[in-house]
Length: 126
Image (cartoon, rainbow, N blue to C red; front, side, top):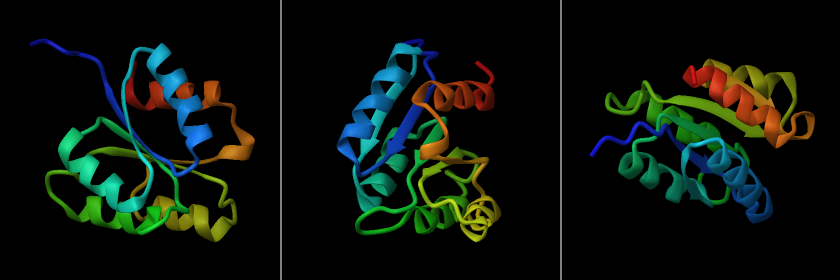
C-alpha cells in the first residue's frame, strides 16, 4: 500500500490550537495525528512513527523537554525531526530545546499556522 504522505505528530494540549494546526497540515497533504499530553505523545510517537513531531514544551504529565530527551536517546526514534512549538521564548529555553535535539524552535506567538506549515515543508523537503 503505497502511502507517500509524510506523517506529522502534533503534541499540543490546547485543543483549539490543535484543531487549527491539524486543519492547516491536513490541507497541505500531511497525515496528522494529535496527542494532548506528554505521556500520550510519547506513546503515539512509537505507535505512529511520524516523519516530524511538532512538540509543545508546556504539557501536562511530561513536558516537551522530557519527551525530546527520551526520543533522542531511543535508537528507533532519534532520527525523527522535532520542531519545538511553544510560547516559551526565553533564550535559555530555546537553547535547551535545540541542545536536546530539536531541529527548529518556533515561538507560537511569532508565527502563523501557515508559516509553521511552511517550516514543516522545508524541513521535510516537500
